[in-house]
Each structure stands twice: as structure tokens, then as C-alpha cells.
Length: 400
Image (cartoon, rainbow, N blue to C red):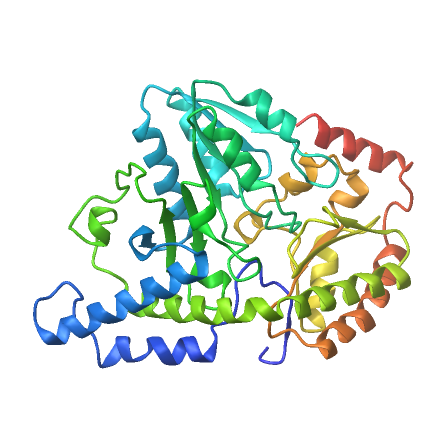
């Protein structure tokens, strides 16, 4: 599969060769503990400080505001728990219906612990309504947790406006920016956001490393309690190879921001070709406010899983939603929240590009997709929105 066409970069990305070269010495030659007093460990500590500086630069933050973590899920959990501990008298949380499971499942757990959670709705474009945000805020709101951009549709949310609104009520703000880092410029120095999370494997670093931005002056109690590492904010010996890799990946991602429009042009080429050659297809998400690398396309009257299997036979990798929920047979919670019809829900495919995606790869997908869609529609049990079976399935989804 080394020649596969990989268009599932919102699930994970390949490690950049420069990133791999940067981290390898810290798996072999420079294996010292960065907290050690001797020179051998000291040189490792210096490498982690360099990486912290690189990550801070990508986020437009100060080095002291960066906490290295193991992944986006840890960062989300650490930020949300810290925000609630910082304001123990407040028992209300605001989030959205389309968050990543790392946030949604934690919020459901917190409801069992006595917190009240408001789950903001989205419209048919997957976009939030700022009036609904304003109406949900109260003096009891401890935290507003909103992703920067949705991992399935690429829709970008007005997080800075939401953060400003939250501040008027004294609430803290957490943003999952896992899909945004390296795709949209960030400047936390001019932001009202208190916590922001990124993950290495979404920007061409390895899995198992991430970072949490904690705005200077924000009260923070660690999720992992142990030694003095990360200024006492995250116990445990540092994953130095991962940290070095994340630092290099952040440096490369910041440099790549000047060329990110290229991914947008390829994404648009892919969309245009599919819409022109395959009938009954629609774009899911906000066409004006979305990530440049992401498109979610609904192929009506076809099962998404069947599309993916056929694409896989051609060496093309895509997905039907978040990799963290792909084990479920339920339709995407994101597309369901958008109120899409069942014919679109079950036939939606996410294509997510990277800086490695080529024009030739996009053209190959455009060559294959019409044949796949035609073949699957020929054996589909329904071919219109009025099919009785389809109406029954849609009603079943709505009543869950």
C-alpha cells in the first residue's frame, strides 16, 4: 500500500521526513532524562526547550504557556477538568452537539457528577448560532468548550467571538484546535481563549504527542499528578523524541501556512469534478468558513461504507467520519446534528488533503469515483428520497 492515495489526513498524517530525522537521535544517542543535572541530560533538556519555543511560535504564544501532553484527548480532558476546578462554585458547561468524542463523552460523564451541560445546536451548514451562545451563558457558567473547526466537515467556528462573549460572564474558554494547527494562522497573544489543544499526529508528527496552551495567569491544576515536569502542570518523564518531533513539525507547519491555499485549490478541484460528473451529490458543511484541506461530500442513495470499500480496492483512502467513532454503525453525530436527510447521512464521505497531496492523485480519484457511484447505485435498495424503506430509516434515526 505504499502507493496508496491518502486522503484521510484529518484522521492522521504521515510523519514528515525532516520530523523523523529530528527525533531519531533522541531514541538512540541522546536518551538522557531532561531533568537530570548532568551534561548528558542537560543537552536533552535543551532540545525540549527548543521544541517548546517552536510550538509557541506556531500558536502565537509564549513558551511558558505550552504544556506537552500525550495527545489531543489528554489535552481536552486536562483543560476541561482544570477549568472546572478553577471555579468550583460554577456548575454549568456549554459545548456543542458536534464536538469530538474526547469532549462529548467527558461532558456526559460530568453530567453524572452533577454538572449541567448545554449542547449548542448547529444549522444545516454545521455552523453555530451566536444568539444561541449568548442565550446559554449565565453567571453559573464555568466553561465554554467549542472546537475551532469540525473534524468531519471542516466547518470553522467563530471561536474568538464566542470567547469574548464568555468573558462577559466570567467563564473560561477551552478550544480543541487539533484540526486547525498548521492550516489556519493562530495568534494566542491576541486571543481571549484560555485553553487550546493541538495533537502532533495531525500535523505530520508521530502519534503520542500533543500540546496544551494555558493562557498566562489562568489557574491550572494538573490532570496527571506526579513530579515537577512541565512546571508542575503535567507529571511524568517527558516524551523527548515526541516533543522534539512536535517542535520540528510545528516549525514546518508554520512555514507551510504561506502555501496552504494550494490544498484549498486541490480540494475545490476535487469537489467540482465530483459534482459535475456524479448526479445527486452535495457538499456538507459551511462552504465559506471551512478548513482548506477538508471536504465532506454526500453521495445520495449509496452506503458510505460501500464507497469506502470500493475506493480501498483502488488504493484510495478516505473516511465516513471521525476515526474515533468509526467503530460505530450509527450515522455521524455531526451530520445528524446538521439535520441532513438519511439519504445523505449514510452516503457521506470525508476527503481530507495534506501538503503531500498531488494534482495527479486528485485526478485519479475523479477518474474512479463516477464508476464507483454508478455501480453502487445500480444495486442500491432505494433511488429516491420518497422510497418507503428510506423514510423508515430516517424516522428511526430521528427517534434515537
